[in-house]
Image (cartoon, rainbow, N blue to C red; front, side):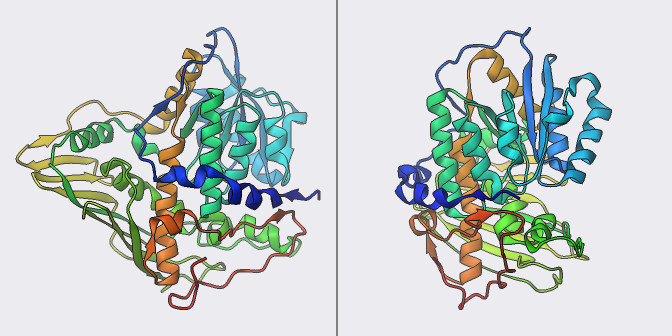
Length: 431
């Protein structure tokens, strides 16, 4: 199998000025200057990269966002994943699926073949470790992008994402993120109230994502190479998933950042470990992180993937004039204190709204660019992992400029790769 080299990734990142951009607060949606509108009569061609559950779901939502959209190319590392995903999309979308056999791409280089196949919009839904490379390639090729979260698994990857987002802005390309709660109408209204002073100046944000294991079973096949085994079991490896704080709990961390106006903290500390998780791999099963802000506010985040334990998925905010709770499990959105408020407005299907807004921006010639804040939210989760893995207090500047690249420089099925050791706080070093 042909090698897909990532060697240029580090050189690019080391010399990039994008590292500084992550410290700049960004509004909820950054709209670029106008781009030529696309006529409703013109078919927008979509390419899907990553045909797993999230990819097939995103493709269905993309095809439902507009009357004149067609899926014309799909790519996945594995043929069985591609066939299963494509068949599922065909069952729901029918004639909107126009993927010819020669536009079904399999292998490590499938992403580039999809991008080069003549599509207008690319849906990125592979394991997160590949996301920076795929996003950069899509923007370089002039494609609009739906970019599933998280956007990277290490700081160098985040810097690649920031640079790609800056390039997209220059090219007037849309980048819409998979941070789905930002497309949820109740949460848009609630965080709008908070940011508008509804609870005064925020002192504390406490976010949780406590749930059971995700993908803890191990897939085995004696014919697979070590690289194939890890990619098949991608959730269990930090370089591919970022650990569950980055892959899953980042949703809660993103809402914390939203509440704080997407202003980054000044330092991060925390704890974590692997208490009951026994699956092959090197990720933790629990984290407890503290984010310290320049104005004295604190963000506390707790996440856990352990069976048989109480679940909790919420964001609690306390300010000088009141408190706010956003409970994702119970669909609760309330403010108490000097101002009593409770959301009782319209509900929406947030996953669909993401794509409705993406394709409307393309039709209208008014690109949406979520690049800065989506990269920052990803980096917040990565910084939390760094603090827990090392047991150190890490400044935001040090975290965002970290040179630790955990994604292999060369990606091919035959590339040698060992299972990295499980991080040991006090022994694992910050790089």
